[in-house]
Length: 135
Image 1 (cartoon, one colour):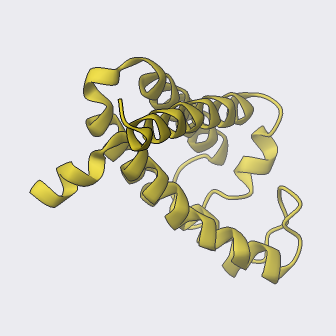
Image 2 (image 1 turned 30 degrees about the vertical axis):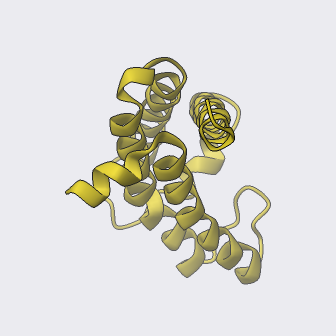
């Protein structure tokens, strides 16, 4: 296996652990913090959204750690998930909501810049970029 393949695999494992951990924190210790990111215009109970997204994150994380044969499809799903939750980060910025230590517009703005990094991480580490290019 080439060095680039090892790097992608290691990165995929890291993303899987990150998502699993984040999902767990949705369900437990950071539940209220995550509720602050739920867009105010979303007609759903914020606690339901946090719990549901936590379950999805855990499922995606575990899939990244175990479903190697389907890694590109799981990576694409993870990238789409990161796109789907981006409005919550925008909501936090636009409405000046303090959560996760993001208590300034600058901190919340910098946080917005990391969402595309997560999307690219999911696509690159799993080889899902090839799926996207093929259409």
